[in-house]
Image (cartoon, rainbow, N blue to C red):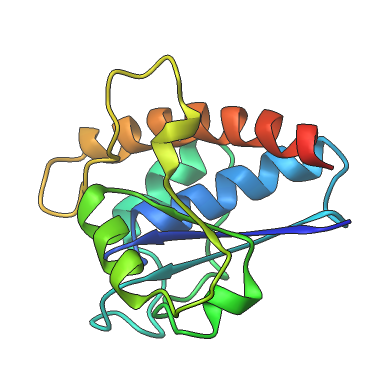
Length: 157
């Protein structure tokens, strides 16, 4: 059995690629690469083909995550058939996904931080226009969400 997960933010250069690399690391450590497929995308098209924001890459590298091979892409209608779970970084992106969801689609749409029960936040804040500390804060939230998501998916495998 495989489960496929797509992480979604606005531009796919900060939050969702961070979630992709962190979750990929957790899945690899658990030996579940053959069972859990992972990708990320953005609801917007501004950054298609671009690498993650350098500040995102720097924050990730400080914790041992390499996202240099990732390139931004936009969510497509096909993603609703290709993935089992689409996880939005915030309510606005969740609303965009709900609006895009084709009739009859059985994909699970949720906020990513629904898997971070110890966090008071329900949305991963966008660090793009903030200071450098915002990228580390995003990593903290993403690591907690990734741990919770992994536990949840392991129960389904």
